[in-house]
Each structure stands twice: as structure tokens, then as C-alpha cells.
Image 1 (tube, one colour):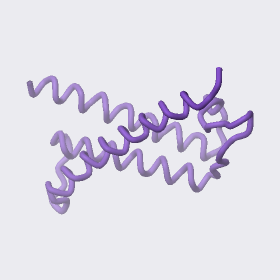
Image 2 (image 1 turned 60 degrees about the vertical axis):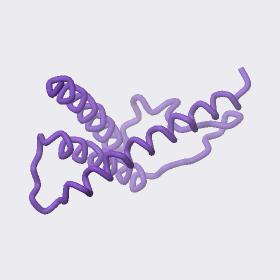
Image 3 (image 1 turned 135 degrees about the vertical axis):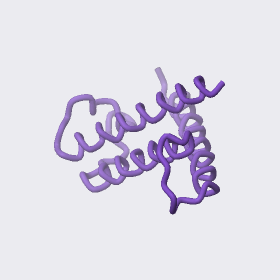
Image 4 (image 1 turned 180 degrees about the vertical axis):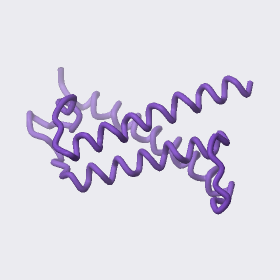
Length: 112
């Protein structure tokens, strides 16, 4: 069971780290892969995030990856209480679940 847990944790840390790196790339002016990322309504983008906001998202994604690494015990930091790490992982689960529900609603609202 431990091997499976570590494998899942490795995948989650890898995905979150890659997403953080892509956001840093976009904040620095990169454009590859950015099409279709920002939601649109009738062909107009609903938000236009600047470099600061994009770096903020990158930082949050990197902290999320660190939180999963802490919870899986890959990284040990003495001054971070275990209870905070547990709350952080549950918060991530709720945030990503809400994001998935929001995406489903957005896709249903968009006519084909």
C-alpha cells in the first residue's frame, strides 16, 4: 500500500510542479499552450490575467506540490505542524473538486 501511496503522491507532485512551471513560463511572456486555457464567453475572454496574477497561481501550485510532498513524507520540515499539512491536503482536495464541478457547469452552459 505504501508503494501505491508514494506513486500517487509522486504523480500529483509532478503534475502540480509542471503546472507551476508552465505558469511561470506564461508569466515570463511565453504563449505556447495558452490557447483555450482562459474561459471565453461568445468568443471573448472572461479574464485577462497579467504576469503578477499568473506568478501568483504558479506560487500556489508550487505550494500545493510542496504540501503533498510534506504529507507523503518526502520532505520533512520541522517548523510545519502535521495538522497544518493535513488541513492543506484536504483543502486541495476540496478546491480541485469544486473546480471540476465548475468546469462541468461551464461545459453544460456552452451551446454546441
